[in-house]
Amino acid sequence: MLSPDFVARLRSLLPFEQVLTDTVDCFAYAYDNSRRFCPPDVVVFPVTGLEVQEVLALCNRYKTPATPRGRGTGTAGGSLPEQGGVALSLERMQRILSVDAANRVIVAEPGVLNESVQEAARVHGFFWPPDPSSAAYSSIGGNLATSAGGPHAVKYGTTRDHVLGLKAVTGDGKMIRTGCYTTKGVVGYDLTRLLIGSEGTLAVITEATLKLTPLPQARAGVTAYFGDLSSCASAIVRIMALPQTPSALEFLDSASLLLIRGRFPALVPAHAAAMLMIEVDGSEQSIAESRAAVLRACGDKGLIKGEEVSDTAKLWAARKALSPLLRDIAPKKINEDVVVPVSALPVFLEGLEQLSAKYRVANVNFGHAGNGNIHVNLLVDPESADELSRANACLNEIFDLVIQLNGTLSGEHGVGSEKRPYIGKEIDPPTLALMKEIKRVFDPNNILNPGKLFP
View 1 (cartoon, rainbow, N blue to C red):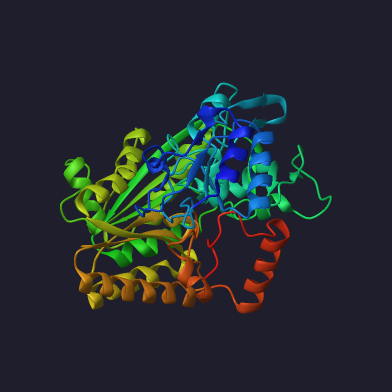
View 2 (tube, rainbow, N blue to C red):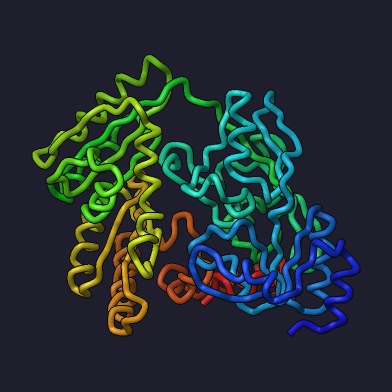
């Protein structure tokens, strides 16, 4: 419960309509796409960097938790105000401050939608490569908080690779600038990359200088259907060994294909047990060669059909329909975005099948196979304590397998609260201790998104 004095001072900082205190009004800011519920005591909507600074300085003075939030599309619980306090919603900071086509730069506030950045860049012949499936709804600030990726990360990299600099406010209310405006710069520590992916635990980003990439002249698609999982996994390894890196390489298992058939009946052959969706991009001259090379790499005794796709938009519509379809059919899904080296995918995918059978848990797997990022979805009935227990035991062994294969527990969703208990599997105690020391430097009173990331 917040002190009346804190609330009064907060209201003195901001206009009336930028502060919500009524429980009903605050309800929408108590959950995200993880479907967990953690109500804040108050919701604040700053519209300038100065207002963010003033709010955080006040929270620091009163040692009141402040949880930064974008549009709530995250699945790891990273924007949940677990300890109450202030939900700091940045959704009204929606200005694109500048578009500098000559230098391939856009400067934007954290509440700007990913899709809005794409539209602003497209006019000038550019795009911003991070493209999570939630691009139409997720904000730049949220993308930065988790270093979001998406299908095209296989060729272009994740958010961390496409940001030149930031303005941010630390937990004790200091405004800092990181990085620079140019694509080369090595003055001081790389605080930009430190803040990206830190899930709002170190500082609240108020402005981002984004690096744009020229739009390719052409794109083309390939689909490949396999009768067994191992043939598909082997094809992924061969495709990623090609000199022509695909711009996207998506994997769907048999359970995913069952869902796709329900929405796109004519898309998937009846006996297909796995599918690859592959996109190549580049010049008009290179497209045909790249597509032919991919089709050759798919050649295997387990290949049912490999074909060119002229309409890549339809391809991605089918892929992006998967997560919403899973939400429709599953009362609860445990959604993890683990990553293993591409060469380890055959072993990992086989291991997932074995663990799913061992624990008798329904499992749907798909994801960005080109960089080994697989979205594992364990489908469980939340009313069944036994099923939940089996699913959690299965998940624990999945994480063990990921680490054994030299992988990582999250590729783009972040840790939040959902993966918090498992962090010790990947990060050793001395490294974890150093991370906590860094947290104390940025946020001495532990007010920023407290409790997240660390077990």
